[in-house]
Image (tube, rainbow, N blue to C red; front, side, top):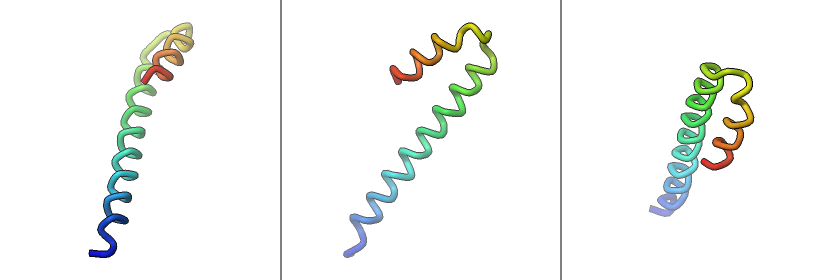
Length: 49
């Protein structure tokens, strides 16, 4: 039971990493499927997330 908090923190970190990875993949697909002149708009959208 003494390592329960550590497990919770680990799960939280892994969950955050997976979420960030998914967002990175989705944004990469959006960038690759968009015209090059849409990159500034993508950057604004990315920082809003």
